[in-house]
Image (cartoon, rainbow, N blue to C red; front, side, top):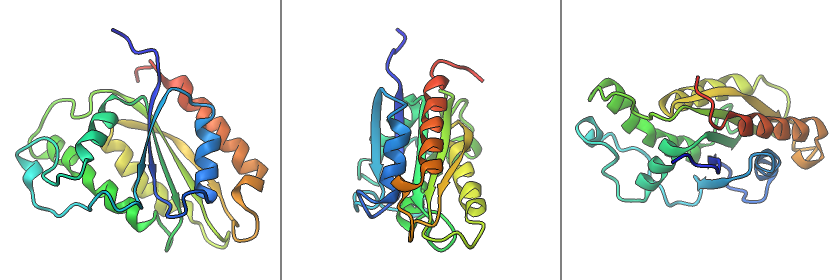
Length: 195
């Protein structure tokens, strides 16, 4: 039976629950609709990968912190959003810790050699905020996020950056907010497409 509601997973990597990154996510998901799971990477619920190597011989993860529920969502999702402030030129540390738990998909693909590790093709986008605009902040973030998107079987549709947030809050950056909404529209069009 075909689902009619879109399912989206948001990996939220900001410690500021209602800060600039949240404004970007809100603008994006207002165009997505459907069911949304927000994975709070800074809430302390999820541990980083410990390289225990359990996933080299088993699906899922040995750490009993609820990440198996996230895997279920990822595997059924139509879209994945990675959202982060730029910290030290890349994604936030807590977000990277949670994304390290995608190691189970890498092990499935390259060690256990399982067909269709994450069978459902999905769309992915990256939402970034940065306090300054002095550096090329997108490049490192896109590189890291792209690796995560590949593990989750998500086609990377693009990145939206709201920079200079030390001086202009994201919600006042009309270009960034409009781009986040357009990205949400692109994600919503993805449902049901096969690439």
